Length: 276
Image 1 (cartoon, helix red, strand yellow):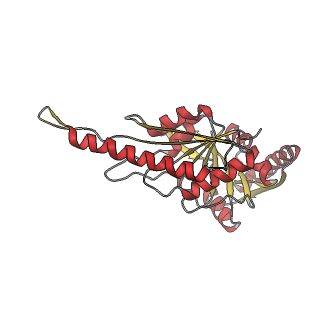
Image 2 (cartoon, one colour; image 1 turned 90 degrees about the vertical axis):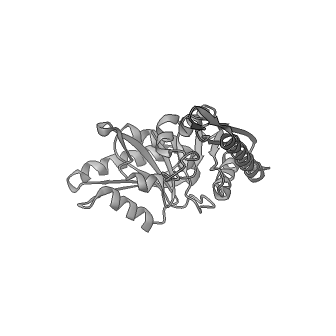
Image 3 (cartoon, one colour; image 1 turned 60 degrees about the vertical axis):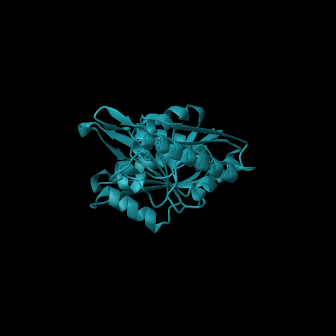
């Protein structure tokens, strides 16, 4: 399987140059069609004693339309001549931006996005909750850190935690793993679980080998926090791409991502392909 259609989400009023160059590189690598997408929520109209004050709402819609148009211009300029075909989608919606993008992802094999902007003090109308997007979309999400200009695929890791989500991530990330030609399968666990982890990663390495990916199994038993050890290891090895599963934690409705903290994967130092 290759990625035949890429869906790239652009931040409004932001520098999307690096994100778009990574998208263009992948479009050229896979001969893919690229769909650009951007969205924002309008501000709520002000109401004073039953009277709706329209001026702010009208100005806001005009400003959003201007920002959406600027995103489209960035997209078309960056992808010109580098994608098999391009298309553009955008919306002003009162609903969740993550939900809108997830719905539109029906057309794509892979979503490419910058990290979550985080919660703003006064205005979240431009914010896309990337964790929510990953769980809604039914498609893998490639998170490209701000400042990243390219995806060289020299140091590629598959974060393993034996279960459905990691297996799904490995399958969803297979086109990128095959493009790299090599990967390290890394499972970090407690010391008493290390022998089982070694068996897990050997199996995965053998499976990847059948797909032409030279894989190095690596199981680490540690007394340290697993997430901290994994993050330090990835930074030390100058990771270009991490493929990881997104795991649900039913209690309190919280989510963890491949056994790694949300901060590490949703605002990463390296590109992360996240799959649920």
